[in-house]
Each structure stands twice: as C-alpha cells, then as structure tokens.
Image (cartoon, rainbow, N blue to C red):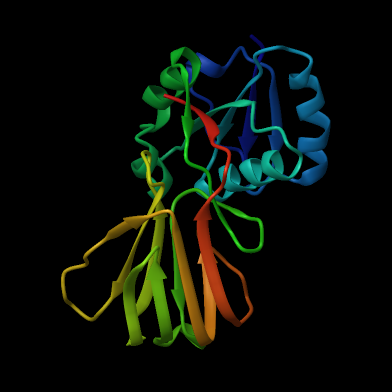
Length: 219
C-alpha cells in the first residue's frame, strides 16, 4: 500500500506522518496538484491519501475523485481542530486522527454531493440573499422540512445510511434533524455556503443527495 499526505495551507504535520511523502497545497487544493498526485497513487493497488486540513480541503479532494472516477482511493482525514466533518465522520483530530488515518481500515461511506457536482463534507447552510431569512419550501425525501420563511437550512452528511440529515432553523426553538437520502429546496432566492465557502450567487433551487457510489474513509 502506498500512502501519501496532502498538506493543505501549512497544516501542522503530526509526528506519525512526518516521514511520509507529502504534497503541499493551498487550503483548497488546486486541480493541478491533484492531477499530478493521483496518477502516482494509482500505480499502487491500494492507494491511500491522508488529507491534513479543513473540511473545504477534503471536499475539494473528494469532488476531484468523484469527477475523475477515482473513488477507490482510500482517504484519511486529519483536521487540526474539530470541524463539522470530523464530528460527522468521527475521525478525531491531530495526532489521534493521524494514527487512525495510518492504521485504520477503509470503510465505504455515504458520499454526499449537490446539484453542482460538489461534495459536502461537514455542513451546508442555506440563507436568503444577504444573509436574510430563507423563503421557500424544502423536503428531505418525502418529509417536509419547512414551507414559508425560516432563519436558515442546515444540511450535513452522516457516517451511516441513509447518508445525510437536515434541519430548518426557526428562531430559538430546539433544532430537530431529519435523516434521508436527498434534500431538495425551492426558493425565490437562496445562497448556499458549503463547508464554509460561500457560493456568492443566488439560486432558485438547491439539492443535496447521496451519490450512488460511496467513498472509502479510513477510520
């Protein structure tokens, strides 16, 4: 098995990973870096890539694997601090996550993507324009999450099937999450933030759903 480290944005390297071949990249890995690295990994029958960074960096890697039909690459995730993704996938952080990424076994894990083909790792938050209330109607599978106006819509992956969960924010009321395979939203205007990255544009609809193939998470 060949193991390679992708170090995003100068993330600290745990001692357990210090001797492994490493590629330096930005917080969100460049396509060119991944295009150079992945063929090297493909030369091994059991390639493993360990991503040091944040949820947005891992999401970029998984999106590239999805688009290039390379979901057979084993992926370890080593965030510095707790993130929505580290909680969803129970990876741990720092040295503990590094040990797990090295010694753990890959497990097929639901891959959550949106209608633009981008993978979601931690959390998507949907607001109205300029951070205002979100107007419209949203469903998770056949369950209606809301109709009318809410503060926001949150969507997160889950480690187990059916693959994702969602909740509508209604003031100070306790959030109730619903699980399903797909979330669909229709709205006069919605702005989506995926793993901390704002899309910067207003859209009339948005959906997140479980891809027909899983990714291989090392835990």
